[in-house]
Length: 362
Image (cartoon, rainbow, N blue to C red; front, top):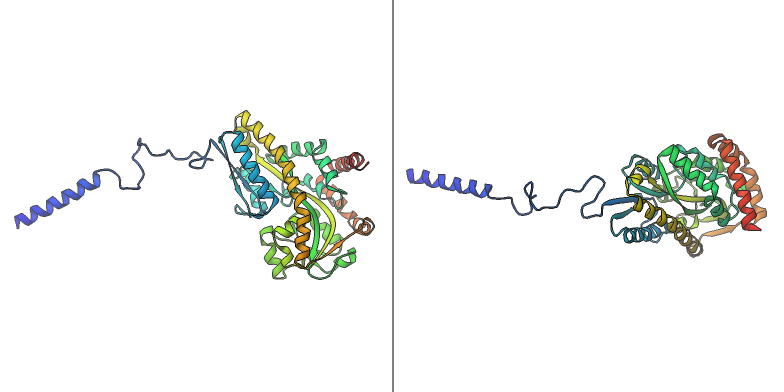
């Protein structure tokens, strides 16, 4: 019996010694060991000094937004020698555009490239860019956004929201699609329900043309069209193609009612935490991004229309004369925008458009 007791005590002692003799394989090293230090707040393990998360709602593949952001990522990481790591989060991975905007303001997301859709809630002045049929073509829009008016909007945005607009990108020229009937006149829109962004100007425009407007998150739009929650929607042709809306829509009317930019904006507190040399690199590369983002968008326009035609969509192109009734029917939207954005900013953009047309069209 004594021998048995002695044997049991020796076994217990051996287990205690093994347990105290260092950490198990795969466990964290003891304090002061040679393991990697935990990542600092705002950093990813194994990343550079700074991480720049960029969120957007566009598809992860074959889309101008993600493709151009991948080029931006490459250029920034090379220019900073890896001090900034750029991470992109496409396809609403970090939420819809409203959540992305809020996250960037709060600082949980460093940057975004999104449409004007959710912006009126925090920056009503942006609504002047949604004046129906404001720009006769993209070149006039570029002249306005890249000129003094666009710079003033950047300053106002920073002052009112804490977001620094690094560059104006391109969502595209917006057009109507639907499953009910071809649209050639405003009367053809009566009784048709359209999905719009959460932009009061877009909603008012659809209502003024005789349709009914229903805001739906971009990531939920395909299923909403498929299930008949709405009859139609309005988007640039590149979005219609990349999101495959042509699979659930029959008619497209290329009326170009709104030129819609993408806002490439960054949380200003994060931006100002960067060393000055990195701030300069981001500003320079964002300016370059604007150019190739717009170029990608324009190059994809023709291919998108071809894709829509091959899928069997009926495409209606309106002449300048056919657009006049649409322009006249939406004059009431101007009053809404002036009331929300202010008379001064409204008058300024109308003057800027007039100057831009004189420079571009003459």
